[in-house]
Length: 206
Image 1 (cartoon, rainbow, N blue to C red):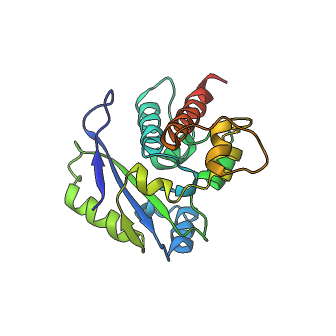
Image 2: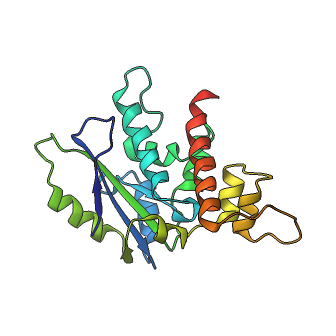
């Protein structure tokens, strides 16, 4: 069952509906519909291998909604869903953000997010969740950090977020031939999460 969230410090009528899928078989179709700008497929389809925790996509959704509502900022991409994918990026390159953090035709796992204003007359939570659960053809798993970390590609995370010379990343990546300070595994993951979220947040300052 997809997860429904409202985010503190944002208007309570905005909701994130989120579902995580593995063994996905229709990524090529989803990707083609995004390129065709089919409004029926207006979702944030995220590549889970670049995620390190459930807070990462939630933070991206927060940033997208915040910028949507702030008249001094606004969106830099076509809609709040593409903005969510862009918000995962530590750089201002929109094209690269889609390529790195969005799905590809060969993706085998997909995180799907639908952001809606519940104050609209057209809003229906039941139909939204039903559509979200069926639009991706795959096996739905829990949207939580435990499931996300099963899909994480640490080499991609290290490259895309420019996390060089960080011992805890190498520890998790099991890099050989380098002396590093070992930390408990959970602490290493937490440090990595902080580094990634920090890189996302700092984009607005550079």
